[in-house]
Image (tube, rainbow, N blue to C red; front, side):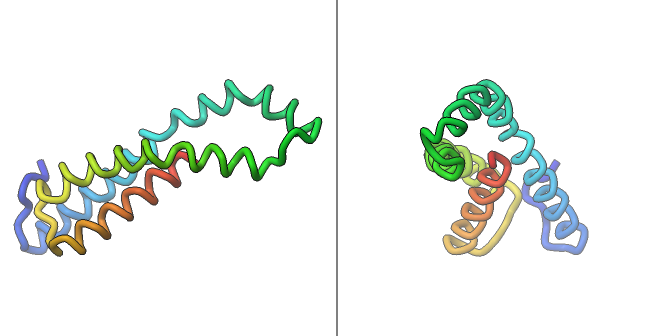
Length: 110
């Protein structure tokens, strides 16, 4: 549906539509973290109640643990979609697209 979209105004709308669908899919893909937190909730509440560690320590640890998987997910997503859609910008455009995808997936997880 979005394969090699042309450079016309209709193509620009197609690219925007593809990016909107991609961002929403990115958020929905990362909803598995909610299930993991529900599983760990009892342990989290118990250990923070006894001051075993702070809440911020838990959040930072969970965030940093998820980074390698998010990088792989973002890189595979960007490698497929950047050239398939026909986005331009060379390597710097791809790098910006990759960083935006990483941030989107990370926001979806947290």
